Amino acid sequence: MLKGWTRFQKWTVSLLIISLLISFVLIAVLLTVLKVTERRLESVGNVMEEMAVQHIITEVTVDESIPLNSEITVTEELVVNIDMTVETEIPFTAMIPVEENMLIPFRIGVKDYILIDTTISVTDFVNIDVDDTIPLNQKVKVPIFGKRGPSVPIQGKIPVHQKLRVGFSEDLPVHSYVPIDMLIVDTLPVGLSMKIPVDVMVPVRLPIKQTAKITFNGAMPVDAMIPITLTIPVDIPLSETSLSVYFKKLAKGLKGLTNLSLDDVDLETIEE
Image 1 (spheres, rainbow, N blue to C red):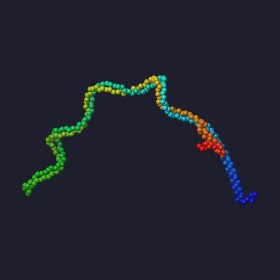
Image 2 (cartoon, one colour):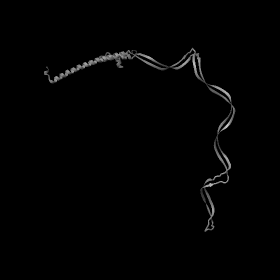
Image 3 (spheres, rainbow, N blue to C red):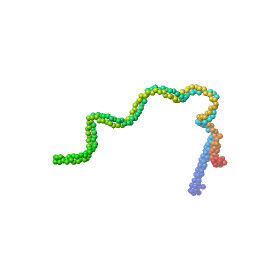
Image 4 (cartoon, rainbow, N blue to C red):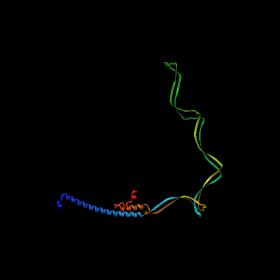
């Protein structure tokens, strides 16, 4: 039968047979994968259904302060240990005699002029710098040929710049006003004999350590913040929450993921 076929027809038939075999193999692989996928989706769906009925168990730590504004009545006596220090002031009035010799420091500034009228004796030589001008206005005779000549008037100023060493053989009178500007710091003895009136408040610190019984006649107002620190175990069943519905829908969707029908699709969930 194949003897009458051409070479092209033989190649075509061979390719068709090979393609058919490959198609069968692919179909078998896809069916196997689909079966495995269905089983895994079924398993995941079962897990999601189990999660929908599970419980969330945890512990919540509460560390808060609760305001309390109320009145409480205490009917029994309370024994209170008192350990405190009372600070108060005591009035003190008295006349205190004072008999005392005291040294009172003083500080006086003196600024005045003192008249000096006396003589002083200078025994040493004194170096004096002379810086002056000597006026000259007189007639000088000019000799002519060795003989006495006529008088010629000379007028001018002779500058003198020289150091002179001067000694004084007699006492020098001094009559002048000398300025004084000085500060006197000293102490002055003073005797005191007097009575000082005292009227003051004396601060007193009294330590008290005692046990006392206290009673309360009426209700006591209480306005405070009460600290509360608690660790509370919390058990939350998922079946009573809105998450349970979504877990069940998700499990149903996973189990029917490989179905070609749209009957089990929740349209409200898709719209959300």
